[in-house]
Structures are given as C-alpha cells and as structure tokens.
Length: 156
Image (tube, rainbow, N blue to C red; front, side):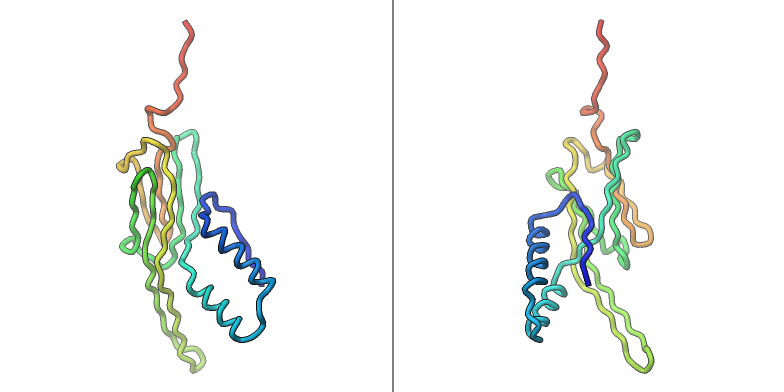
C-alpha cells in the first residue's frame, strides 16, 4: 500500500523528519514480527494531524482556513492567537462499539492535535471569525489591515 501526500504550505521540520523516516523504513523494513510490531507502534503513536485548506480572496482581502475535524464538536476545539500565530488545537476522544456477525467490534480514537498558521502583521484577534459545522472548522481573517493595504497616490 503506497502513501499519498498532499501539499500543505506549513510543514514543520518534524513532518519532514517523519517523511524521511517512513521512506527509509519502507526500504529497509525488517519482515520479522518484531519489526512489524515496531512500525505499527510508530504509526499508532503518531499525533493526529487534521487536514487544512487555505484560500485567499484578494477581492475581499480575506484568508479562509478550513480544518477537517470529523467527530469533534466545538467544545473539543480551542483557537488561540499568540505572537501573530493562530493555533487550532483540541482533543479527540471517540469510542464506538457494535456487534458484527457475532463479534464485538470496538473502535477507539484518542489523541491531541494542534495546527498553527502565521498571521499577517497587525491582525487583531477581534478581526478573526470562526465557525464550525458538521466537523468542519472555518476560520476567516483579513489578509492585510487597512493601515497596511497599498494606497494609490495621484501625481499632482
């Protein structure tokens, strides 16, 4: 099974390290049961990393960040602004049980996540708007402040 990676403009160095580790471990993986157990343990201990899309609307001077947070409610998600960095974090505690052909099936997903976006200079926290609908968090903020917007100067 091959991995598919999507472009995200805000990769951290830890993400690059993980990509290289996965690439080299796939080539040099040990086929013994201990090696497979170690790979499974590494994959299961990996932190949650929700998908994020960024969209810039130059006409409206807005940037919209959309985060996919399936199974989470707005009570489980926090949004913080500190030193011109917007951080979306939260915790997932999902557990379900059902019977399937006489087997008890239990699925659990626990973990914390955090995604950060650098904000343009001069953005005030009150200019940032957020809403959540069906597990999709949408955060909107201005691309530039009115003071930083380019102005045309007429020549006299």
